[in-house]
Image (cartoon, rainbow, N blue to C red; front, top):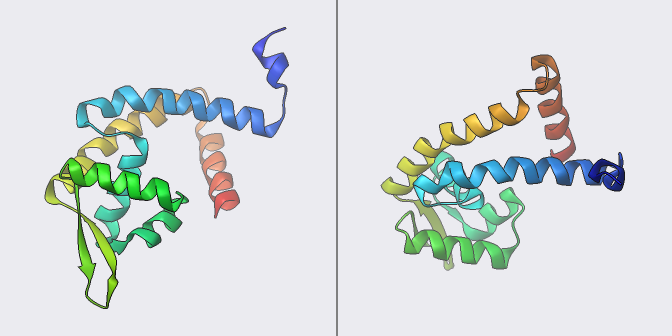
Length: 140
């Protein structure tokens, strides 16, 4: 039986397969920057929104709290983010991208754009726009 026959046309199987193909291209594209896709998501969000709490970034990116702590620890060890006490609530830390972290987010963005462009290349431009719009609506 073909792999398509095993997966069938179920949405969950198709989305999982598409995600695996897309993510498979991200690793090599991000390797020169020393980060992975989740780390880039954190850096990009921090570069765009400035210092935020780990809880806020965790919720915004739909990453569980424990995983977010590990991501921030790793990015801190690489010198790409820094934690600092929240001046309005000393019990919380704010996380912000360092200059190096902002630079990597900016330089890695085009590499990810190229992976996404190649992934979507077989799809007509109007269908690409519709797909992105639909996915944004579903994950809104």
